[in-house]
Length: 459
Ligand code: ARG
Image 1: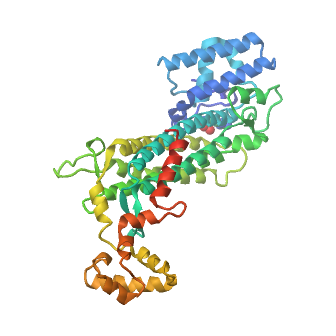
Image 2 (image 1 turned 60 degrees about the vertical axis):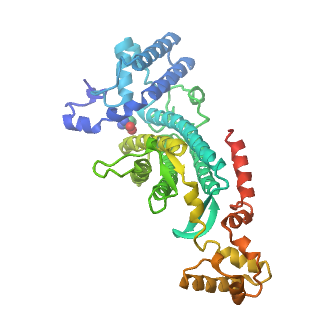
């Protein structure tokens, strides 16, 4: 197939270079967006009388027909077209003849490709928003039924203080909420039209950028044509928001992987989300959270690739930018499948072992702070109380005992202010219940938060 520019050249492109240069292998994903972009452009050229109304109609009908053929599986963009933009233009000219050659009036592939990826990304972000909300709901459902289930809380992976399991799960809902907010902000910068910036300088053809922007649902238009065709910040912002989302998914994945070990035994995987081993008959492997944890690396890699792609690239459009597509395509696909898999895992793939969880908080020193706080309640300065309890921990460890095994006389040896009622304060249930500061794990606080999320997520 002769290249659009062949008249200016004497010789054909080297066949290997032709393939090397082409993006049709991946940018064919943008076909519907490219068609919509061209339909809006043709409508606008008709409205501004650059094209006669019959020419505009002929082009629009041709583009609509290509859309139908594509959706019916009768047309699929492929080589030798270099990219999706040429592919559609060539197809249109084949279909309607000479008038098709007027479509590219007053535009360039530079503003066209920028428009296409923005349309594609906007739609993806809207899908992702729905997927994240579904995942939040699955966390909330588990939280609702586990307000009074206790789980050890850790810092440095060392037992710290017991928690309500619901409080732990609600922490993920908060992270996911920040993810949603980030995507919303990214969307506002995706939703700006570069169309009509042409190659880099704008055009002398009578166009109406506000018209095409409105047709395509863009909120505003780029103010500077050079910036418009050079900006890939929004791609980086999208992948950056996705990298953070993956960090959150990898965090819960790692926790689930730990929880289902024999060592922790805090939860079990149901058969729906676990796999066996080809050799060891006893195995039930947490492949789903492992895969999500593993896929985090791909998204981080895409972020690095895009940041490097734009570094030091002079204004305006440069072919480097063709490399923006595969990272954002793969990022969207990866995060969408990871969020879906995590939602299934939370909805039907995990069962908490309530008894093991409650037993686990009975046999440690995670009530040590409460012992210190008991003395604080008797007007002992916190630092003094803290040191008293430190000595008590040492005393118990040497005797392989827990606080609850000490006699009140032994307590009194460490501090005379200890009374019988200290034993109630040591119970994990009361430990959790008493942490009633705003945002704390106290049951009253957790219940309040569960109710508030229930309203926010419209359950
Ligand atoms: N395939 C190109 C891309 O993805 C389209 C824009 C090409 N523009 C150009 N001036 N060569 O970026």
